[in-house]
Image (cartoon, rainbow, N blue to C red; front, side, top):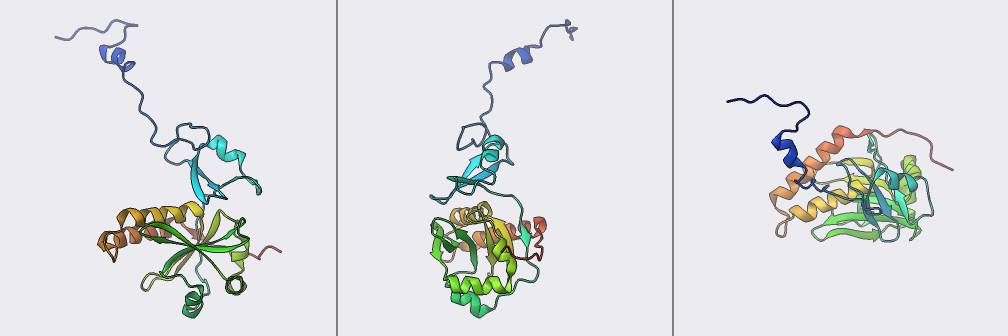
Length: 215
C-alpha cells in the first residue's frame, strides 16, 4: 500500500541522513588542512624538496614568490618535438637509467637530476658545463622556472621523449615506480605502468614553443 506524502514532511530516509557522518575528503591541504578536490594544486618546499598538496587559497598565496619557503607548481606539460641531444651527451650526464628529471635548484645554485629508483627519487648534481652545452642547443631550457619546472626525459629502450614538466609530475613518476617495482629488474607491471604514464603525458602535452631564452 502506498501512502501519500504529507507536504512539508521529510521522508524517513532524509531524516536519517543527518545522522550519517559526512565522507572525509581523500586529501587535505598541507598548510590549512582544508579538504581538497581531486584536481587540487601543489606547492613545492624548496629546501626540503618535497611536494605539498594545497587548496586554491593557499596556492594563490605563493604564486610568483621567488624567495618564499614554498613555490606554487604550474600545471602545464609541453613536448619537445625536435630536442637536440646525442647519445654521447646523455652518457656524459652520468644518469644510470633512461628516465630523469632535470631542474635548477636555487638552494644548491646548480642544475640537478632526479631519477626514479625502487627507493624513491635519487638526486645527483649535473656539471654546469654539460648543462650549458645542452641549453645552447635547446635555448628553451634557459626559460624553465627554477625549482618547480624542468626537463623530463624518457630514453627507455628506443624512446627519445623530452618534456617541459612541473616537478610534481616527476614525483608522480618516481612514486609509481616505487609502488610497482618488484625484484631486481622491476617486474612486468612497473614497465607497463611507465608506458601508461608516458602515453598519458603524450596525449595531454602541448607543443613546446621555440621561444628565445631569457637574458
